[in-house]
Amino acid sequence: MNSLDNLQEKIKDKDKLVLVIDYDSDITPLRPELNPPLLNSIFKRILENFAKKEYINIVLITNKKIDEFKKDFAINTENIKLCGNYGAEIEFNKERKSDIDTNVVKKMTSIFSKLKKNLTDYAKLGIKNEKYLIRLELKSVDKTLISEIKTTTKNVIKNIKDFDIKLIEKKQYFEIMPSSISKIGILNRVITKFEGNKICYIGDDEKLISEAKKQKITAIGIRPLSQTSMKLSDFTITQNELEEFLIDTNNLYL
Image (tube, rainbow, N blue to C red; front, top):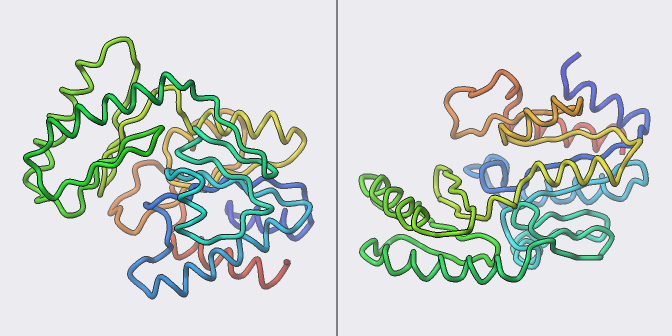
């Protein structure tokens, strides 16, 4: 029995579950090239329906700020727990808080100014300050320039003193964020808060897959459509299979 079958059995038996789901641009919208408004609608409706069940808790991890996420995706989050900007903001049961110090936000604003100054030559590069992280949008940039942008960004980061930050590289964007912000921190928080529940991580983050295995938590690794080969053997399902699983499980058991 594979990991999705196991999860479906737990839902069928009404086991107490916490589904920790990555909701970032690599995973969703599911199958973006095929009628995204319809699929977005289905995916949101199913997540909302899952979250209504008293035995299922949904925790969504997003790289957006919580308010921006709610606005962009128009999802009913009344029963959904949100971790915005990868956990810099947490909203559980309508109560929102952040463990990030205000000095960190000031530092990020300063780094944002330095990046804008050093990357002015790249006209089609979008630079956005998300308060807890900085995003460099690469989708409109000439592919031959991305290596230069990366080098310049690393040089700016290298010259930042007394502040530990990291660069996350994605296919269509780079993110600069404090090292203190970590999805693993979200997972540990969930483990503590929902003691006694069966926890399942669904996403494409290699570090979280590894951490879940260490914590003996079910982990379902998603293989994005843009990925031509699996980085780890744990990435066992495709976006299409996840979509079919959610629809089938919702129709059969919820």
